[in-house]
Image 1 (cartoon, one colour):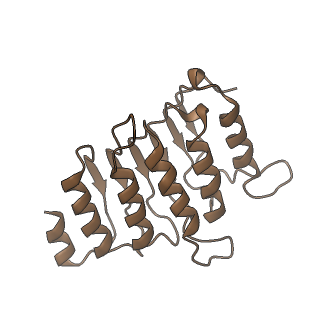
Image 2 (cartoon, helix red, strand yellow):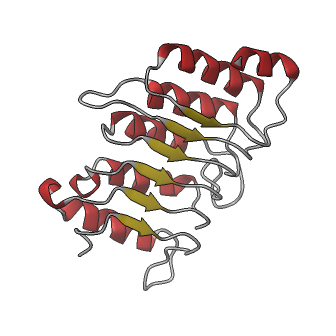
Length: 190
């Protein structure tokens, strides 16, 4: 397996299985990570950007984050996907709720990139920020979060992030580029 890898970049793949079905490859990756003993886990960065992942993929990613094979994971890149939509393009926030909970439980995760995700709105961003800036048991919490380029995020996201910055001792970097934030929301961040 890939138990000695520190960085795995699967960006720009569809993660289709041999049967050509969506998420089959992601399911196989999840299974491999679940089977890896925690003491062999060295993977620190996992890039799954630009894979056309939809809401259903969030369950696999959440399951992966709980797997012993990702015990050492520090950075997760899920940028340029459709995590807030189902495969038909309809809003589907339930997967992001499960993903937020898993990110909040993961004790070594310090970086999370959710930039440019279709259907990712203020409610999803607030759930992610809330769960990821809580201090998990045995860990320090998220230090870097990227939410930029999600056009459905706005003032509510900025206000929650400002509040999280006040409460969290770990959050160091936040990317909110291209959100078209109104002026009062910018003041909240200062």
